[in-house]
Length: 258
Image 1 (spheres, rainbow, N blue to C red):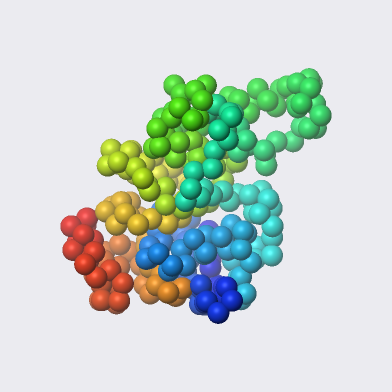
Image 2: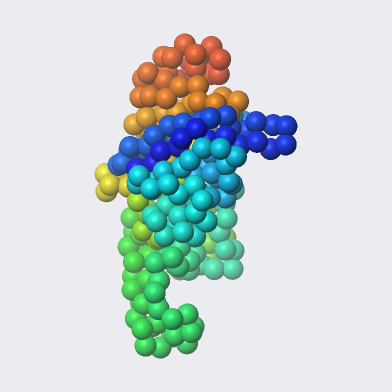
């Protein structure tokens, strides 16, 4: 589904990524873990097109997309969320989600604004599809609520729903469980497993090791911009390089989460 090949990114004198490589299998949940400054968000930005690499290539479905702009990557079937919630505060829940369908809409913008002809039919189709997505993420009863009235965990789900509205085959989630309480985190894990069962491929950056170890099919560990380990959760958890060079006191937490 996705191949990151020898990606390097330099910010002045800082080497944020150094020849980082890993592969994401179709229909899997693939986690990226590492301390602050390890390069996790930078690699997400390179994959999604926010950041151009200094070297290396990104292959999506076997096609080199390294030079493609953000909107073309979205059209190819890629969607992402960010560390900080980025919702439109003046809109309700379903309006936020409908914004995510923009790449898939084909009607003349003027017809859509006027609400006539093909534009009206497409808006109805978009509205119905977004209701289905909100049902999928467990927010159908809040579809017409102001997004600012939602809890933090529900706002995170709205972001995921908006990303799903574009119809992606690859979903990139940057710290989706950040700030969630244990119940919200468990609900999020169940949602991601359900998405995987529907055939969606998910790549997630996360600091919650219990969440990652129980959820992921494969884990890539980044440290100082380099890939330190890559494999199944059990193998990563027991890798001496990961324990000694990166996890330290968190190693016990990883063992408990198995």
